[in-house]
Length: 214
Image (tube, rainbow, N blue to C red; front, side, top):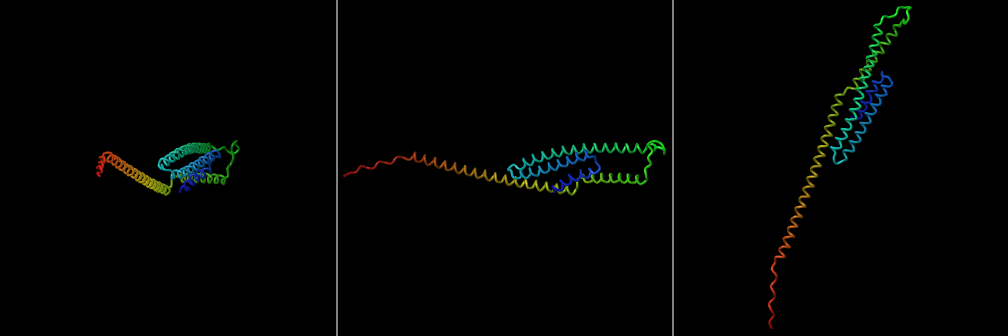
């Protein structure tokens, strides 16, 4: 499931990069590579946490670092998308202005007759670009099935953590019970030894033997 998440995270910017400038495509690829690195680092930290005694604290710290890094990358991606939308809107506005402008008459400067075939190719290219943009947006949307799998995985991890916590508490309780029983036994033995010493001190001295008569 985590490999699928990484694949979706990498595929979405690649689909959108088909109609992007080299600078925007390079920035989007950088964000995707950084996101993949953050996910891989989190998986490695998660494995280390499961081998520690304080599992919850370790996992919480790793999750916080992952959330912060992904949030920063998401903000960069949103800013990049906004800039790209502004550029596309400016391009569409410029194209509309050019279409609304009166066409030069034949013989006038700027008159370049456009064959009908070229118009159809330009329209087909626009439709292809719009279709690729819709596909990229669809790929970027969260998959309900994938979200359900993620929730199930989180539930399994939470259950495993609770089981580990119960086992740890049971082991600690057993250790405390053994220590308490050992201390009680030592106290009883100490009291018995003290009582024996006191009894020996308070015992009356033995009577002398009678004199021997001939």
